[in-house]
Amino acid sequence: MASFELIMGVINQRNYKSADEILEIRRACDVSVDMHTLAMRMAKQGVTEAQIAGAVQQVAVAAGGQISFPIIATINGQTLHNHYHGNILKDGDLFLLDAGAETAMGYAGDLSSTVPVNGKFTSRQKDIYSICLDSHNHAISMLKPGIPFKEVHFETARVIIRGLKDLGLMKGNVEDALANGAHALFFPCGLGHMMGLDVHDMEDLGEVHVGYSGEAKSTQFGLKSLRLGRKLEPGFVFTIEPGIYFIPDLIEQWKKTNHNGDYINYERVETYKSFGGLRNEEDFLVTESGYELLGKPKPKTIAEVEAEWAKGLFPR
Image 1 (cartoon, helix red, strand yellow):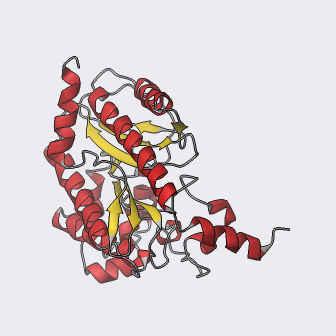
Image 2 (cartoon, one colour; image 1 turned 30 degrees about the horizontal axis):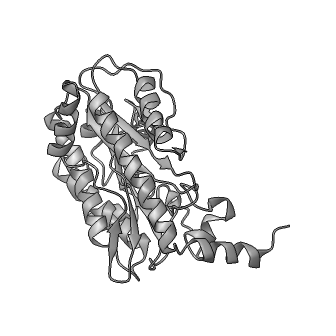
Image 3 (cartoon, one colour; image 1 turned 90 degrees about the vertical axis):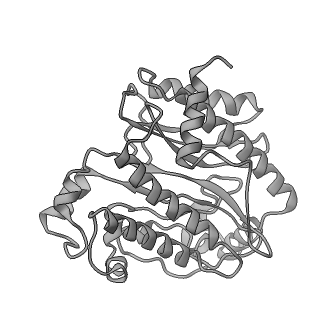
């Protein structure tokens, strides 16, 4: 049986990244950005998910490393951790890439991007993408030593609830909707996770120890999937990755019992059942005074993503 003291010793060593480790993770993130910009340029009608996944992996290998986890490259972004690559991209689709590079020393990057296949977000896609990006950027603005990551997750959820209320998809009091987990119909996962020598670093040693410092995790749907909840400390490296997903089976399941009906406008949600899902993801280091984005910036605003897509129209 594994020694608890040894497990905690490993966690306490690896949770705090050294300067050399941070340098390696920056390298992984730089290559990861190159993987994502290539995917944005390739995401055209008639291209297959497999073609993009293969090209993205080639970028990681050519840089001297490997992918840090099996690539998610899909027009069905509503299916989390979707590793099927058999679809052909078509006009009107949103293409979601979740992929990262791993350096020769084993350090990981982990990014997500969403791009419209025809190069321009529709009005509806812009609405949802903007809410998700607002929640992402708001979460980043909160990062500093001492803040519980669980609170950052909650504040991210509040941004999503307010945005979906503005679109008529949610209703009622924001705090009550949050407390009852109504937002989890659209955001059923956690805001982020620790990262380093593994893309979900040390989770085989126990999320309660790695991400919660021994504190019990919630059993509420959505919140129980938050892998990191503890107070942030200098040297921590982790992801920020809010998403908004319209999962038909989950919508049907909740609608049958009017689950959280005080906060969800199911009639309006029905009109979004074929929307899919989207997210942005970046990697961050907590510093003594705040935070640092690891790696070069990735296109993530609507204008930046559309501009990157357009670069694929011409020979380079």
